[in-house]
Image 1 (cartoon, helix red, strand yellow):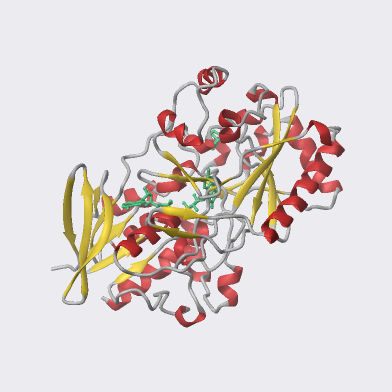
Image 2 (image 1 turned 180 degrees about the vertical axis):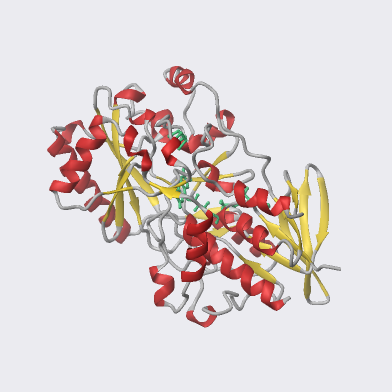
Length: 429
Ligand SMILES: Cc1cc2nc3c(=O)[nH]c(=O)nc-3n(C[C@H](O)[C@H](O)[C@H](O)COP(=O)(O)OP(=O)(O)OC[C@H]3O[C@@H](n4cnc5c(N)ncnc54)[C@H](O)[C@@H]3O)c2cc1C
Ligand code: SF4
């Protein structure tokens, strides 16, 4: 009889682990959310709603779109994650970047895993055909400023992208790759997927992890397994570990996002692929982005969606946050604030070259959606990828392992880590 493995979560890390482990193990995937469906409703209708003033708290987004969850950090930063099959990958903007240079410096060489990823997931920047004229102008301005803007490489079949701009609500055309494809591979190889199943904690018997306690509706149920892989994301995994008596570190990073925007007639950014190009700087990146969160919930965003032009700043923040008793503590440090100011200045300069005056710019809502870092890998674990605080048969396979903020799209790096973790588990079988 094959040994049993439980994978908690079906996002970037969980779906990858389930796919890699099924076969060697009999895998059961426990996912808190339900099967994901893209939002196909009329967004313009919600735009009309917005003017009624009924939208006032970002957490209300789940009433429009239940697969997006917003939590508030103690200092009010809006923290975004996906809940449902595919986790946060279903609401991502599809950016496919390899970001493992810091892991490499620690001696973790993920070259073989990335080679596999580029074979398994199509990557392209064919969305350029749908760029709006003002996006092309911004790109040229950034080039003239020697900021080296690059069209964003994205995961999926972007030659078929319609430029509808709904990426963060799930792609209705199946263009964008998300981790449900790995999940489907695992299930078609025999893995069992259980949705609406929230894991509370790991259960121990005779000093060994023997299963997990889950909440399904009002019922509490124990699922037993030989190996447990926790991949409930940067917010979910620390909670499960802490509920199980396994301490995490106060190393939470989230990659804060702030948009700098202006009124611009017929900008049409809301009807264009999200984040078409990227400018990389040392501590942040900049990319054109229509921010629905700010549009619906921030009173500064008072123009019609089609007439707003916005540049997103994504910051590599200091890893000093924590999660305790379900509360998330995450504040910008003085260093973060200084780097954010520099980024706002750079956006202001880009806008001024476009002809927009500083006094006509407005900011978006501070939010973030790349959590991780609470069980950071160290050089001691560069071969095993198994942090010493974990019991021998419990593993983590998600962003929680990343030692510090990438300030950049992490999905490919998480997938690579989850592949290596799975290889190590398979080798120990
Ligand atoms: C709006 C937005 C856009 C983004 N765009 C990009 C992008 O373009 N490119 C990129 O690389 N990254 C992007 N990201 C970030 C990326 O999506 C996440 O960093 C990545 O998906 C994290 O992977 P993960 O495996 O750590 O967690 P997740 O993908 O979040 O998966 C965690 C899963 O665990 C489940 N779960 C949580 N708690 C429990 C529990 N107790 N029991 C059972 N299941 C549980 C969740 O429902 C979820 O399915 C974006 C994020 C956001 C918010
Ligand atoms: S812009 Fe392209 S990738 Fe994004 S949702 Fe529309 S079709 Fe899908």
